[in-house]
Amino acid sequence: MPIKKIILGTDHAGFKLKEEIKKFLINEGFEVEDVGAHKLDPHDDYPDFISKAAKKVAKNQESRGVIFGASGQGEAIVANKIPGIRAALYYGSNINIVKLSRTHNNANILSLGARFLKKEEAIKALKLWLKTPFSNKGRHVRRLEKISKIEEKTCK
Image (cartoon, rainbow, N blue to C red; front, side, top):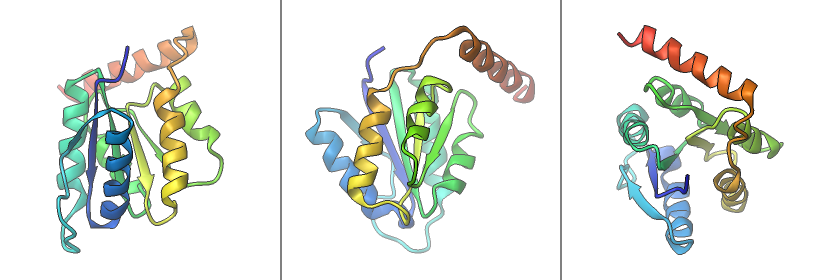
């Protein structure tokens, strides 16, 4: 399934990197929706923006999300509270984790740790993440189905 739209979300800690990634994605021809932050405000709170981004991705299976924070940890936690979201975290080091997040987990949101990544590293990881398909192998499909069932039971 081709990616139709990329949803972006961040707080102040990831604001600068989000702006750089937004330019990159637009130049690559992606439709981009930025749910904020729209200005640098050191008093904003990431759950406000990240939950908004994750809900939009969950509603549109042809979209993916990229979220940003200081480490990306809290942002991934918030995103993963939304049913249907599989947010993976990357803040540098072994880039293969980005590929595995797609092939094994069909991650639909990538959480980037802005204080640990240079712009070039973030773009390299994002390119790999966007081009890597889900494997659709039986064991990975089975595991995702189990996750969906857990979400259904928990969110009733």
